[in-house]
Length: 73
Image (cartoon, rainbow, N blue to C red):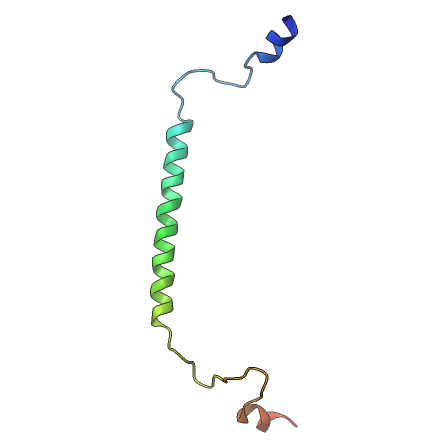
């Protein structure tokens, strides 16, 4: 039993009860959640402001447009 007692001993720094790991972890998780919500709201607003079609946009991406045909030699 002596070997198990030695292995079970806590030698990993401060052993006080009521440390700050729990509250600090909760604070970081809440901070990340708020940042994620704000980023999603920002990107949604930017996507809504985009036009439905951009000027010079082709319906078929494989087919060259008239502008592309005039520039080829």
